[in-house]
Amino acid sequence: MIRKFFSRVFGGKLPGRAGAPAVIPRARHGVRREAISNGSRRVVETLQAGGYKAFIVGGAVRDLLAGIAPKDFDVATDATPEQVRQHFRRSRIIGRRFQIVHVMMGQETVEVTTFRGQHGRQDGPCAQTDEQGRVLRDNVFGSQKEDAARRDFTVNALYYDPVTETVTDYHQGLADLERKSLRMIGNPATRYREDPVRMLRAVRLAAKLGFSIDADTLGPIGELAGLIENVPPSRLFDEMLKLLTSGHSLKCLQSLRAKGLHRGLLPLLDVIVEQPLGKRFVTLALENTDRRVREGRPISSGFLFATLLWNEVMTQWEAFKADGEHPIPALYRAMDEVLDAQAEKLAITRRVAGDIKDIWALQPRFEQRSGKRPHALLEHPRFKAGLDFLRLRAEAGEVDAALGQWWSDFFDAGGQARAAMLATQGPDPRKKRRRRKRKAADATAESTPSDQSTSSAA
Ligand code: ATP
Ligand code: MG
Image 1 (cartoon, rainbow, N blue to C red):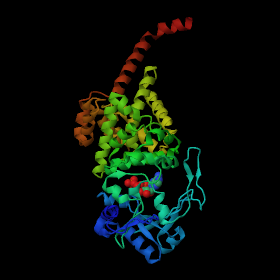
Image 2: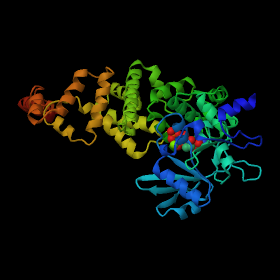
Image 3: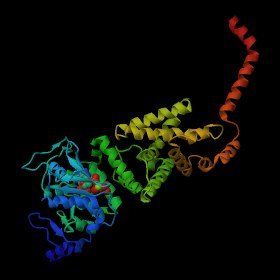
Image 4: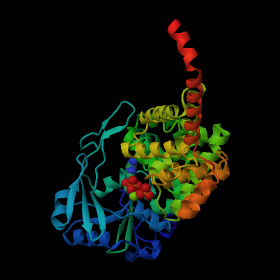
């Protein structure tokens, strides 16, 4: 009965007692070799012709089986990086800790990874871990079976062979895929301790695939969420970026909150639920990003982080202004403080930080709609991003909707129409200020003799 069930589920060879994988034929899984990119297919074929094992692995196989277009096609092989290199003229070895090979195939770059061994094997070198169990080094080559066991979720441990059109499945990933379940390979708590980023990956992949997280896989997350704080900031930044640009950012962030995983990630995530205005703004920003991703339009990480951190900036800015600081220096100080606070947790790269600041610093400049300044603003390299940001603020009710509209119209208008728009705005406030100053100076000059006499007398 059980064998019958397995044979229905797997269609092909059954998983053996000694942990032999199921090898599933195309008739059962339906993925044709044409679904694989030309470059990765050629890499696999070349390596196999050279006598090595080679497969498409990971996200690409999972996505194809789930009916989603893969982002990229990675190859895993038992050839060492040096051996891979010998087969491809246009290839180079990258990485120091664990070397992988980039093979250039026309426009495509195919990442080829040698099967990785299980750290902590009894017959192999033990992985170094920190006191929480996080793996610090894990750089041993291994067998295909070991490679499968060190992957995170069962659906991520499927190996597709475009030559035979079979899927090799060590952990019943195909069955999990069909029941739309994300299940950790091995003991979930241990695997999260080894690498806490897996908790974030669970949330992101579940949102992306529309899967539920298996109960045992979900179970330890609440208790272990704090381990995220030990993850190096640069890795967190990469993972957050993946999460926020997944096309499901809103769903991911809501799920992170529900699981207590947002702490230590981005303090600003509290803003999403705790401040009514913030909630609206951030939600709108995330919806906007998700829409863009799904429409295949580009998004900038600077813009994204600028939206997520904006409420923090506003709060600081208001506080500094309330202390009597001049608005513009107060804004710059608020920007630096917010970015510095994030830097501890999230290594926002210098370039991205520069973009974020540009977008923020443009905001008060949009308030000035007369004189020469609006033209100067149009020339700013980040004008378009700043305007998109202003529009979001307008949509969130943070600034007057008419202001966002005016700038959109001004941007779209031709030279004459722009001049007409400026004419309706009255004189340049700087000129007004200068006139006011001049008047005040004249008035002082008129009264100066007596003033001077008093002061000199004093
Ligand atoms: P996507 O590309 O959609 O973000 P992915 O699963 O392909 O998802 P990658 O970061 O490209 O994610 O990783 C490729 C594969 O490497 C995964 O499918 C998984 O098998 C393995 N992997 C990635 N990160 C981890 C991890 N933290 N722990 C264990 N295995 C991992
Ligand atoms: Mg991938």
